[in-house]
Amino acid sequence: MSACVQTITDYGLRAVGIGKRLLPREDFTLCEQFTLIGSGMIWNVYFGILALIAGFGFATLLAVGKASSIKVIRKPSEWFIFLFRGSPLFIQFFFGYFLFLKLKTVFPIFAPFTAAWLGALVVLFFNTSAYTAEIFYGALRSIPKGDVEAADAYGLSGWSRFKRVIWPTMLRLAWPAYTNEAIFLFHATTLVFFSGFPAWQQRGDALYYASYFADKTFNPFIPYPILAGYFILLTLCVIGLFSIVNRHLNRHLPANTRQRLRIRPNLIR
Amino acid sequence: MACYLTTGKHMSIYWSVLTVLLLLGITAPTALAFGFAGASAARSRIAPVSWFGRGYIAVVRGVPDIAFFLFFVIALDQIIEATRHHILCPDWVEPIRQGSDFVVCQAAKMPLGNAPQRVHESYGFAIAVFTFAIVFGAFAANVIQGAMATVPRGQIETGESYGMTSRQTFWRILVPQMWVYALPGLSNLWMVLIKATPLLFLLGIQDIVYWARELGGIKTSRFTDYPHGDWRMWYFLALLVFYLIFTRVSEITLERLMVRLTRGQATTAGEAQRKAGTT
Image 1 (cartoon, chains in turn green, cyan):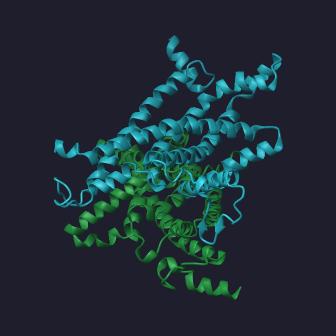
Image 2: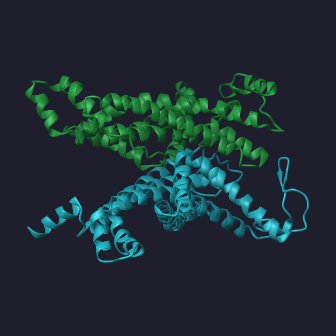
Image 3: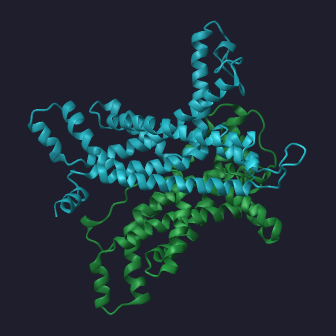
């Protein structure tokens, strides 16, 4: 038991570079596997949360852009969404990494982008923005006509109509699909360290450590189920948080017409 | 330039495009079969069968898929070798797992140690296809399960009122009608499947990602007639464009298929088609 506490202090923050330098090399205990894979989850959560928050704002802009009647605004948004939804995230990571490498030789300012913490975050941010924008765009188009007409009748227009009527309704309609997108995003973060971005000083994410253990012990039946357990917990947390927001968004509706969250997680891109 | 693009190594990247297409060609029907089996199992009235179907769908969908890919490739290999070990070498006393090693007798190695390179490659490919089929089968099962639940209850009741058994209503009424409800989900799945093919690289197959990294890397004049700097960015740009075109073409094709399938169905789209046809 005390050995396990020692392991946790040694490796609990290993993924961010705090603690013992060397990874365990032999006689792997269950405790070590749990601790290191859990410590890797820090990166998954980091990438997921930041990309999600940043992506939310950008996606709203893109969705409004795609729904715009002005061609100069609509076309770029459409192309951006098509580019990132039509190609595999895995290839996007590779391309992004090599692009940043090339840019680094010309502009030294791009040096941090070749590291996972920023470079992969940028790719994930663009990717999730595109997927979310498509969801929001679909929701924008299915806003009931009556809601907008009512806003017009009250004399709301332009920004205040968008802020008070269109945007909240869009969010409410898009929320179930957006929840799934958030879950996908967290699952997609596991690709980062397998796609060119180097895990500097073996600071990797949960899957990186899980595959490290599977390689060393040649026994996939322990590390991967641990990883799966962590991800199921993470997914449950995401669902919990999003359903609180969902309840808030739907609070003005009579109970029997409220939209229930339908969770259909996990399709890779 | 034309000479550069037709060197022996470049031929391998073109072949690996075919590998990707072959993977899609085999996986799609296999996953569909898995999905159909899974969905039918989940609907079953026999409790253990139903639990098995539901469990399969829930577990595979709850976990990141690359974790599944990485897991299954080793796990399947070990299960096959362990099974062969027990059958072929029954008098072997030592345990299979010795610390960090996985030891089976020579005859149980899969593929055999003296097999040609070709066999090794196709064995790896077969395992990869099977893994893809398991994972995407679960997604397909989910879609098909939803589609089966969407077929209007009245349609099945009509079948029952004609005295059909439950097996007959399943095969003659439910299955033919569910496709139109399943198609949007399945076409989404097809897109996801296309976009999952680069993950073959993680399963140790020499696919387009492997060759793009290989060919794009810095080449000096010592090893090749065409020395160049780090071109990996351009190779991956080419892959990006390849996938964009591929998904776009499938999208258009699937839309056409949807129009064909809705003809004469009791859905809003089918009704709209009928009206457009008569007026």
